Length: 327
Ligand code: TXA
Ligand code: MG
Image 1: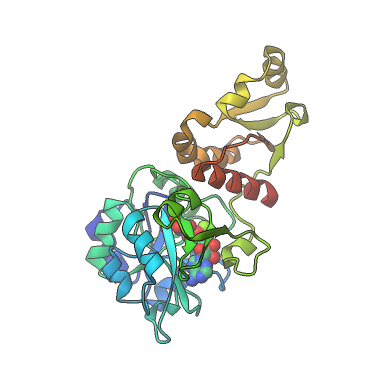
Image 2: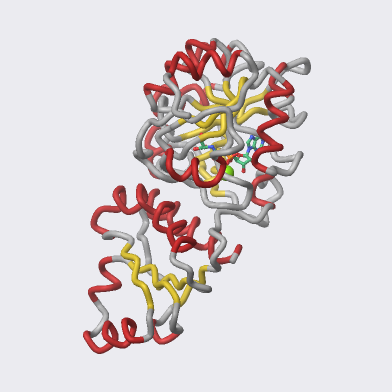
């Protein structure tokens, strides 16, 4: 059932769980202060009980009403980049009603999504909305209402169809509680380059899986379709009856002999778009990745490509490596 913003807010207030669009990926939403609704999110997603949920707010003032304080670097970045695809870790008071959503943690990861429909729902509900990506844990994040419908359609109380997500990769997560060193806990479309521009004196560190302040989500198998995806360096590694994910540039480099060979070996080619337009490539990325599950092949190959040094390029590189390592 596709919902209007009014219906969505009404269902949320009643404690229901619905899928909502954001500019990054679709979220599985409930009012963050209703424990039974938050518990259902974990249940529907089969999410480990110690993996906290991002909370969505309509404004900086609404965030301020729930946290101990917004540190100065966080406030500066929030003012510049929100609404937008970046989330900030902030401290909660001891008795915070958001602790169901944070699994008891004293910090919440908060963001103001850049999506008019969702912003209007949060305003109508007048409460923060907890919303992890609207996929079964371990699967690819959905970037359209159809993708949500396919994965969780029969488990949710409704879906708000806001069209395709404009960014298509999950938000950057930033810990800017300390002015001296800011941590990027998850890479996204806005990265160190853009953040640094606002705070040129500050050191930015991208957290890797082996760091001590790694976020819980990094521990778990992540972002993979059911079909295993193998990252290959050379087209010779492709075997038959499979799918091949390849950029326009990668495809352009294949000889005509190879194109014929692949087609004779029953390799289905999925073009990911061009490195010249990373925004478009990112925005269709998860849809293309999850489409391999519809092809009835036992393996998919991804011909390795350097996505470049832009924040979006680095975020894409991070996701494809996670997908391959989870396969
Ligand atoms: O773009 C996004 O951020 C999307 C949309 C729906 O807003 N949401 C999303 O949520 O990607 P999720 O749950 O799929 O990923 C959130 C990540 C997880 O790795 C989780 O462990 C981490 O953020 N996280 C959330 N709250 C946290 C907290 N309080 N402390 C540490 N890590 C947290
Ligand atoms: Mg997720």
